[in-house]
Amino acid sequence: MNKFTQYIHVLPVFVFILAVVVSHNVTAAEEDDIAVIIAQELELDQGQTEQLSAAMDKFGAQLEALMAEQEGEDADPEKMINGIKQAQDEHNKEVEKIMGKDKFKQYEAMKEKAIKGIFADLIEIQLMDVQPKTSLSNEQVTKLAGVLGDSKYRLIQVAWENAGKSLRPRQKIQLANQLKGIQRDTRAGVEGILTPEQLAAWDKHMEEQKKK
Image 1 (cartoon, rainbow, N blue to C red):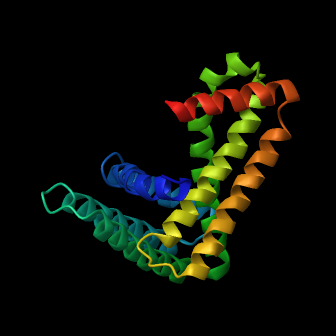
Image 2: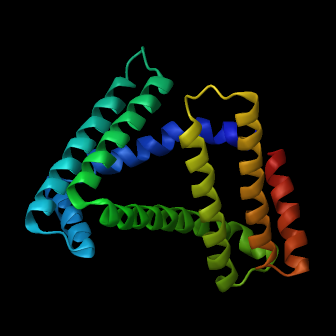
Image 3: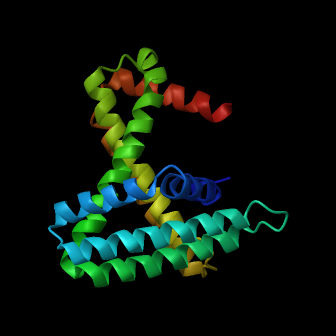
């Protein structure tokens, strides 16, 4: 199974986690708080804030409904992914209409930064197991988490954009080149952080993980 296929398979899990956070673990009051924080950051007026809060409530309800459909015997992951993509597109259009193009770009950047931060935090925890084997300093762990978090975000973005699509040969080549580019950037980032000795230990650990 190649990396792209792996990320296609984890997408429902990733989206499920996101949906749970939005739909189950966040109360109506907390959703309003999130809308207020976003509104303050982007300097939205009261009307825009209320509209944003309503849009978030609506999107959360749609995600919850799509997740509920997967609990029965007729679960269809592809239908779920397509449904979430459609709901996300509609939500983005609604949010852009509320706040305007320029502020929507800022909003998207905020979301990207937040997601990358979550990935980096999770990876930093995972790297604690690797740290003794590779003699990484705490500073190196933090830097590596940033590089690997960015890589994971980019891979999932590519997978998400292509999920459910039937790719033509040229598109498959373009996709392969895109994935190779991400891998090259990731490798360059890791090499820029580790010493040659640490890199050798890192590569050895990665090979051992692949065999498990």
